[in-house]
Length: 489
Ligand code: NAI
Ligand code: MG
Image 1 (tube, rainbow, N blue to C red):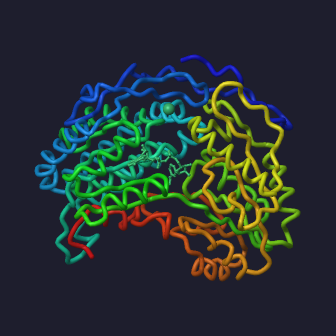
Image 2 (tube, rainbow, N blue to C red):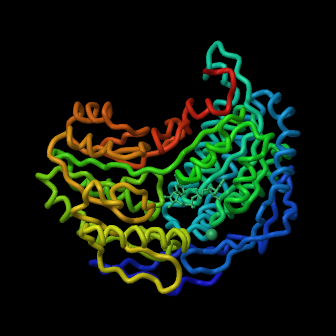
């Protein structure tokens, strides 16, 4: 694989020695078919798309553009596999899930590298967050597979059937794990549709399933773009759709499924408030806010993209925040020192660029550290907007990039009013040294998850999901089993 030649040079006080992760253990095929009934097959569509490395714009592999017929073949395979898989004792299903989890751990480095190459996220994050958390989800749900009568005492629960699962490009392997692990633990079979810019870890995962000797048809993976996803949603023999992605597509899916017997869970966008009180530990809060918005280039549904800071400390806090922005290292995702990697695609870069231009034209004051970006690939400088009004589009719309909109408040009530002034409701962050204030805020914030004095903490045992236009249904924890069982109300 060709080297990245133009690392970014953010002006920082001292330089680190290059620490580039070697990619020689990665084997990416030239082309991939669809994974149906336990093996890779040529797509019936005979069509292929390209996956790029967004940090270099290099071509990585061709992958199938699954058609309606490919989806149909995958759904039939999942239907045929459903009988035997759903009647297998839970302890037997658990053995497969434990095996998958262990194999993900064994091949963690390879998965992390492929995730970084295909999607542009810093290797540090793929290595320390995406892959271990994905493995942890398989371990966690393996534990539930033979204990479902304890999860739902006194109820006779049955699996739902064939689950159609559509995932986005921001955490490709982790979203795969969130979807597949609970479905399999409860005895369902799956057709998964990865995102079109990041199919490669799902395809590597399909190879892992063959090695794990998972019975054919239990998991089928059909790659392709939104048309492939729409074909899965429309397929009448799918019993349940689980979708993570944009609110617009989520609404379209909901319209398609309205009035049908097919079940639906949606995990959509967000515009999370990150609220800093005057008694917050200031330096930790700066780190939390930086992590909240610049983690994964801000391509995070629960990103803390609206900072609400108490007016009394705002000047000091913003000065510290600017100082911290100047030390973020933007550039080669394979360098272990990199904090902010590449934007996932040209389309996403265009969306970010457009919304940032709107922010400027609406009168917010933009701050960007001096930062020279690589000449190849898709990049965006970490950005603050000061003096943002609630009516500005950058305060209301999901940017899904490294852009933070800063507002102020005077009283806790005002903080709540501003925080809840959004059609979304996925997550929120609160920074204060008073425990009682955390509880007071958590009671009033309309958000599925409220983090206090921390941010972006994930654990497989903890449910995650939204209110309002952020979607419905929970993933993770005991709650995450619910969408995949019938007999519980
Ligand atoms: P998207 O919603 O189009 O893509 C997500 C997944 O849905 C992909 O696998 C895609 O192929 C599939 N898809 C697209 N159209 C479909 C359809 N009609 N039926 C079924 N599946 C379909 O999101 P996109 O265009 O990549 O990003 C647009 C914006 O969405 C981002 O700027 C961000 O604001 C938001 N987004 C939110 C995510 C989250 O984690 N909640 C993840 C990705 C995007
Ligand atoms: Mg790619």
